[in-house]
Image (cartoon, rainbow, N blue to C red; front, side, top):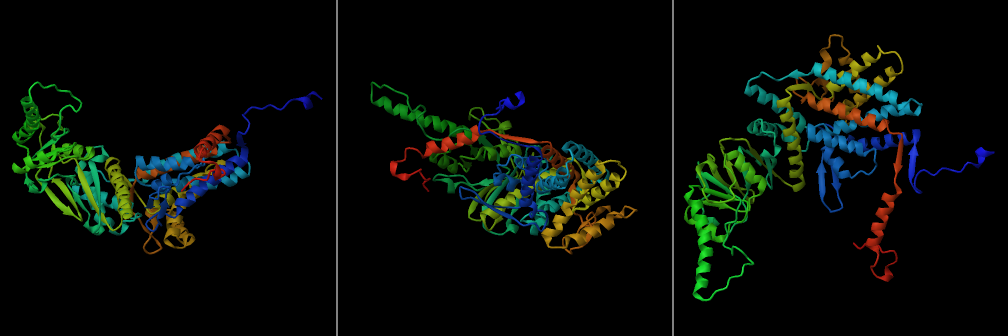
Length: 557
């Protein structure tokens, strides 16, 4: 009787949504699979692009997994994990963002039937972690090094890696043209870790082929005053003075109060202001600099003064560009014009102002320290140039990674098939349930070649059967065979120069396995009602007080 009278224990606040157990896990897996399906079609050289239109009316056309994931604005808590791994892959390696989301989705898809059948998720997690470690060991074993080659050979090899990355992007048609540019840019900055030393400037108009690489710094002509056109626009071996001060005629203190007993004294105050600016300009001219750049404004008086003395000046140069000029030319940004010595001046082989499309660019080339490079991208539409910039960012990251971790693996799904075969073989040596789990992990890895075929319109089953047969050869000759996008058959990816740095694959498998294990380890989701009601109240207060006759206050458009 006492058991029946027991009161119900209320643990959580009223309205809290707590879902737990198997249905909860299945729902999370379904959400992650739905996210993977969104980017599925963007994989590979024949992948389609996504057009994303946000609430501000901006349109983005992209093929890059991380960009799409960022713009999707996913609110499902479990599916957000996939967004995070795509971002981490993008910042760590630069490429393989679609791959990592696809793999995580596929690992969960393979785990779903086992969860349905009542397998404990921890068993799955343990087997997945084991499989992931085995896969990474195998990748390291299969990778071949590009170390110890001459500079010319290394350049060619790095260009092949960049071309593989670019082949799946919008600018894939011109991948050789851009790949050599990317390699030159990365070699120009050397061991410099700051990526912002490679600038990318976008100029609408022209064709992709009109894009060029400046071995130095280039930036758009800044706002200029009268007298600018009288300045010389080309110098050979000029000295460059970099400033962070205003060269404008202005009262030194706007709110100062001056009392005069004699009207004639007023002229001396006006003269003092003029003398201050002329003093600054004289010091700039005496320093011997032929190019003066400032982060702040250079006024009309200063512009005319410099024009009379055959000095080029540009004011309001952005911080980033100024820092890049400083790094390239060996100069130092000054906050005063007093005591400008030769050591703080930069130099370059050639400075010129050049017309690019309907913009004019200031170009510094042949810089002594040479730790910077600038791409000037051309193209028909703004969205197209934006996507080209994202593609080049991926390629730059890949080439940097390949230079640091100089091992590459065959692409085109070859490495995935080889690991899949190896794991299946290994699974047979294991007794117990984990044999099934490792087998399903191996099957999930085949999603990459399968999706490459689907996106290119080939018969995936046919191509995968050919690949399995090739990879199963006892001699091991077929290890480098992957999907041949051009013919719809299979080909030796290594011989065809479809390469990717091994760090891309290692990172992708690591991140995807971690994400899958994380989702599998969650068995309860608790939603706090406060967060939802707080949003509702905020919206209601924004609606309130808009006049009586508007009902519940529809949002005005």
